[in-house]
Image (cartoon, rainbow, N blue to C red; front, side, top):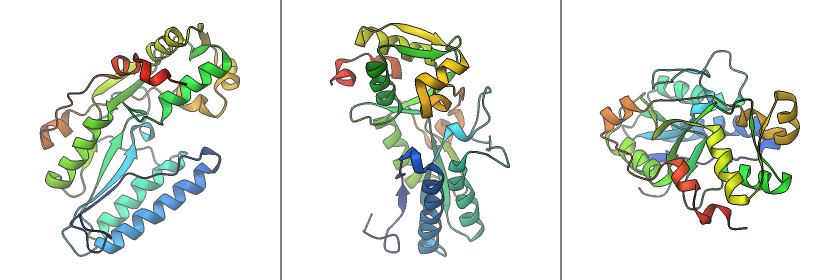
Length: 240
């Protein structure tokens, strides 16, 4: 790709400001970014790939690429998908790659490192209730491969799922963290979890299993990297 959306053969947008103290503001800024990229590519056949999140989808059921966020949706992050639909109406060749709560692997700065740091600070690795709420996951190299395929082979107005594992029980994640840090692994009820996890409690409670069957069929994407638990259970994640 060449520099600049106007001169690019295509655009992949994966950036997002994860400063959660300004989450709503950041989501609205994200809407503006998608609008600007769409305006630069409107009227061309050049693809625009936008990143969204599996966590926007209705919880407790296996979400497919056809599953859409509830409307109205209290999660401000839905702004990305709303902006994509608006861009598609303007004739932009736009599609979405939804990523799971954990995009893991070397260089991970996401939710798993947050949990590790929290367990280190609190002296315990916690989960909520029975800990059977599920996080889908994907290794970062598999995710990168998917974005390339979406750019090269993807269809306009398509939704893709960057999901290698449909759902990993949160308790399994907490257990690996506890064992590696040599701290207790404990269950918290909702009230205690709100205190333990603070702003992260919503994410710790997410139960958003998701399928990528259609993505794999349509793009020929085949995840080959280690799963979340195998990847997490390595010293690299726990280097202070």
